[in-house]
Image (tube, rainbow, N blue to C red; front, top):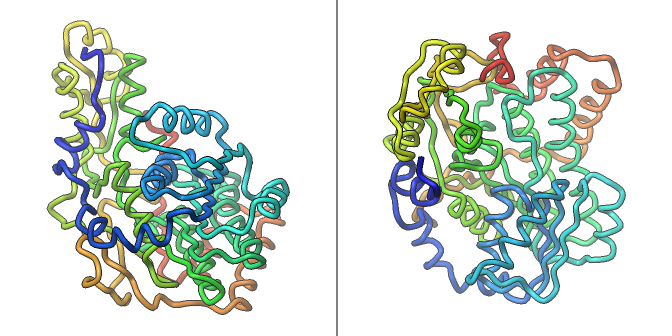
Length: 402
């Protein structure tokens, strides 16, 4: 087995098939605008310890902000972020920076905001991002609380001292959602857009971020370290960006967007990659030949083959609830701007609900969670609130897979 796996090189050569950032031209074209809006400015990043949040911070630091405050519930992730920045020869933290390990939905966050505000830029990356989070009503409630209710609470705090730029990350799964995670992020979009007359608000729908924390590909690294078999769907294709590109996409959207804009990467269909192809390439990169197994049990039983340079892998047809076999970033009735940026598309004039309508939606969600509601009750409410929501239910969830 290779002693060092170069994740960055593998992403470039085997997944995204490009050596330079997808957004290089846009970064160069708008360099002066980015510097003007970021240099010496005060920045608050929520959810900054995750893959996208930390990549946003690294992209941001290239333009020399004057103050950086980072919030994340993941204490270990924040520690690693500081170590990563301190250990890099190309990343320079501003003289004033503070990293706080806490939930941005807490009262402590409001105290910090009152102390540290005002901010020129606020970016929120705190989210439940996994489709697997819809396995039961309690996981669903936690996801909607984080993605929707806490997002609104944050906006109510920001209205008191509005930033020049506010960004909140979305997902491709918000376009014609078929799972509760996607529906929750679609609701989040409606929440933030309802405040888009109060200050400049933008968001972005995402491709998969290769080897992001908690992702299937990051799981490949964990399985290999523990000498466990790999497992992935055989029929699911996805668009991918690198962690660096993810941070750059969010920075461009955050700083350069008009209020209400929804950004997305302009990737072509032929750039989609099958998870099973990535798995085979990953195994070969480590110096093994894939041993294709028919069942999970067979894959577990064949780990002894690792000593013979064969790696057991189990491919399966996707059968879990809320799984979309394809990706889309926008719907047929959304207005697109494909001219301003080289590699970014922008959804313009997205429908904006007034705050009275939004508050009614929030009350309905909170009222449901105050009862002993079940998963189907939540799905029924989401169908009512989001006419484009078409939930795929199979009775299987990802926690039932290897």
